[in-house]
Image 1 (cartoon, each protein chain N blue to C red):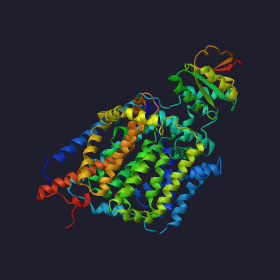
Image 2 (cartoon, rainbow over the protein chains, first blue to last red):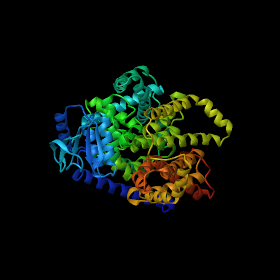
Image 3 (cartoon, each protein chain N blue to C red):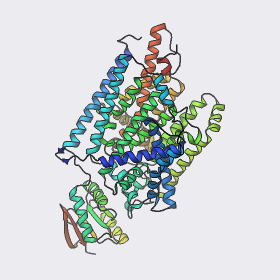
Image 4 (tube, rainbow over the protein chains, first blue to last red):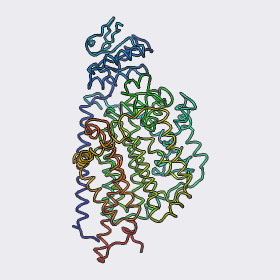
Length: 144
Length: 491
């Protein structure tokens, strides 16, 4: 039988104690964060309701733009892409220097007439009509 | 129960359906392996085999029956349990591992207390993961990639060469189509059975993979370690911060990939009494690796190299004999690999994440070596994420290479090689700066290797202990017997 204070036992105790302590701390912090801080759903109720209103306004067919700015626009457009699925929501980052050519190319290629915006339309675009979808999101019919 | 974000939904129905799907996969695996699993450990192995085979089949089914592949798969899965139970009625369950477990038990009070402690900590970590998985929303990749692919699969009824119309426009979201289908398929099946797709409702599927990872870890450990050390392996894996929290509970596929990686190790160490060729679980598990995550291709190559390498040590004739005896299993791996490559070709979506092959990309990779090495080292030694885990792995690997058997050394070297390979991919990333990509993904890649690495650590400790014990008794170095036999010598 190896001696009680042999180095391998000491190393094992240190390693196990450290692993358990680090794991327990992370689990506790994550549980507190998840139950008392984090949102419950990735697609908020606001966006889900707004997507339902979008379908009510446009019917099940037709692609729309989501006009936003990175980095917030990248995530929010992703929420819209999924909330409005199977409708195609095509994101244009209007902070990109080339956004105008992307917009024109996509508009002509996919015959898109509407855009979801969270604020005013970017310079150079004009709206025929405008509907509030819910929260800060608006649907605009784009003037060609 | 009510919390600031609203009352807690226990998702009992979805958890039941996730377990039902896993059971159907397990019986499908039983049909493939020609056995009738009776223990949780065998059922778990069959589950992974069945899920891998179904994921591989999903691609040709999507080609042959567009829009109907998922319904056909669902129908087959629901029929699998009665068929498997009818076909295999009366056959003895495969329980080779169980017999060895009872043979290696240490019944001393101290060992029993330690075993109870290890099991208790594993259960506590599992409950913590279950509660976290129930409540935390999907995180970035879990939402943007895996659940999204599942949503499209559920809606379209099969795989598509593009994610959705216009998804390839400026290449932003279309790349998701390249990702493998095993996890999305599991989520889409759950959505089909519950009658509709809802992002957070599918989270219980990840609890099944968490438990599967623990069962496979224990299966591998009990085959080559004495008790109670074998119980420490699933405990170490369950208590890793990245395994029990964060992205594992956020719907990422790294947890399922870890479950497959350690299942491969378990199949190598624990299944010597099981079937050969197509009846062996090993080729099906190996072939499933690239169907979970793209990095699975790296794991597959390393696993095959190591399996052949262990034989090559005995001479070329041993390699030829291995190929002759297992040509059917090699064919299974080849077919599953071909289906993955065929799917990538069908999707035909360029990989914009990495540049490999040009001289410029190699020059850039060489210039990045010091920076990437330093970043990887700092990630692996991040105490809040890993504690002393990788330091212990390094020591254990040294012990096993110096003192272990050929298969123990091979496992340690395979895990280390996979870690080096995972680090090396960042040399070729197109993300700029490289830190952005590495800080986003490296820990998750290392996590895939954590359960096999837990086994390496426990093996290294046991080898060190048995060596110290032998030296303490007679002053001579320990003979290279297996750890189990060293810990429990025959009279």
